[in-house]
Image 1 (cartoon, rainbow, N blue to C red):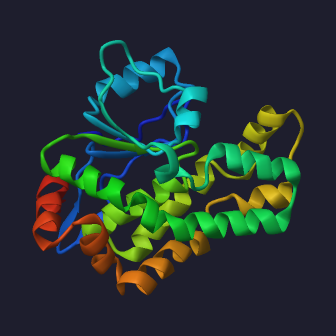
Image 2: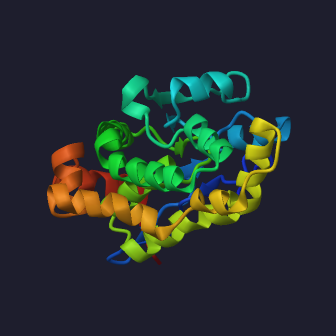
Length: 256
């Protein structure tokens, strides 16, 4: 069990979701659920650190194009079982789309893009959440969920997983917003400048930062369609009371 934060030089937005309170005297067990940005820039030392975590299941939420452009690095012989999405199942808030909009500097376009992405997440990622949950229940752990920046797509999927474990909305939102520390204005600007060769408009950059209102758009869409997050998880992702109990058994520990 890891008590200290895991620092990866090539993936600063990597963290363990362990220790988050999950109600009823329980918390998420450390060393079982990790979330991250893309893994293509890992150093050799990072590969050793990541390999030592013995990740058994990866949920890579990037598009095929993103994976081709920035293939994940793994220590030789340690590549884990991976859930990868294909085609239109994964067409929301991609790195390519985001940086194209930064290049165009159209504020209205960015705002519309982010709204459409977050309202689309519940539909797009329900099958992924179902698949991920089933494999976790079967014992494929530790789990690592990541996308390109580790804040939007990863933020939504991890929020739903944490909700299924009984983590309250305030705690989920706080974890979601932590990504702004690791992948906020400075980092988005630097990556965008590298992408298209000049400094981006900072007012446009700020629209891509993690915001509670964005995650709220996903939750509002869920409540509109299913009445509640619990209703969504059961109807759209198959996580009924029995599966939630199984997830809690796998991923939680009682606070001593």
